[in-house]
Length: 476
Ligand code: UDX
Ligand code: ADP
Image 1 (cartoon, rainbow, N blue to C red):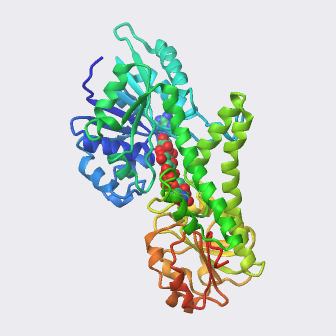
Image 2 (cartoon, rainbow, N blue to C red):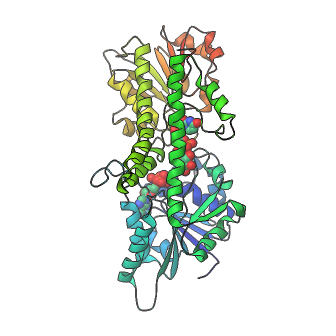
């Protein structure tokens, strides 16, 4: 097997494939990297001359794409051609939770991964290292290897032989900080059963990652480590959110509790911010995957333990919408409520599993009129997520309306006549709001609900606004 990698193909130009390949291209000018996707529209956006149009908003990504695109980084739909010339193929496609059939609601749907494996089997030439980048259930590598080995038989011609190594190389980047996470990773994890193949992949990362941060494991440990990392992180959020609710009931303050426990070096101070509930494409999906695996391997108690992390998160999101209704005298029918932030966290346009979806749906169900702002999420995305069309006329006339929403382009315009505003994403611009000015335009009694702890209480206390913030027993 040749050690010098000249050509990489990544199947899937999404939130993982796009940024990861951009950084590899940036750090490896001698390697040609082709990111392929069968979604032509997405590829057109990656190739757009206006870098504002890239399909993913991620700080720093545009500069890297600008530097590498057309030199050693290419985006196309030429799946066949780019697989054929690749030494390494990364599989970075979506693996949503299955909607029907065996394992529905918990197991990952591996349809797209399987299609990719068949494509690699068909179009690859010579020896190819196939790398699982998407988070996958344990033992997926075995499935990929079986598909590669058996279906490549169908495509073998007399003059060529095909062979494969399958490696697991899960991506730990978090959205919003993806470029930094990729450039300075805590670790690179490579699981596989052949040392030579692991070494070839390690050589790529060694260009910018210190060797002691490149961990080698067996393939199952690597797959399971990724699910476990996300399960532990999500569990931390559910834990702090559960304590936040207790703080509100007892007069304690979750920020103070978090600071106190975070000073214990065994616990650590990161990932302890109580919020509206975790979102994102990974946490829920990966825990449910873990739950499914535990059930499959006859460990129902462990399945129940991890499932409670998701149950707590669902409860917590609904708790916030119920609280808004309760504070507004038990009814929000026809009341105007501003929503600040729709993405699942700041610095991304991703809304997958965002707490805002659950909370907005609840408020709409209760009859509220929502004026939704987000600096990066489009009204079309919100329409998809809420499964409800925007009512654009709401900005002029609200007579006899209930249970509707509209998009507000400038956050300054969500306050006029509003009974309440609910802060759901920690975008920087929301921490600059001048509450004294804002308060003048709201309908009294008016409420500010801060589910992200970004409002300084002393900036509100000098206004006539009522204030609630997450996990604050003093204000409740
Ligand atoms: C996560 C993992 O962090 C990453 O390693 C993995 O590769 C993919 O899944 P991501 O979902 O992009 O990354 O974002 P993350 O920063 O982990 O946040 C997930 C959710 O938890 C967000 O909704 C965020 O707002 C919430 N969160 C995070 C909190 O509520 N409080 C915190 O202290 C941290
Ligand atoms: P992630 O967050 O894991 O990156 P995304 O949904 O953002 O997931 O991206 C996955 C991408 O993979 C999508 O753009 C989708 O079009 C692409 N994709 C899925 N299956 C295939 C396939 N067989 N060939 C090429 N692209 C694919």
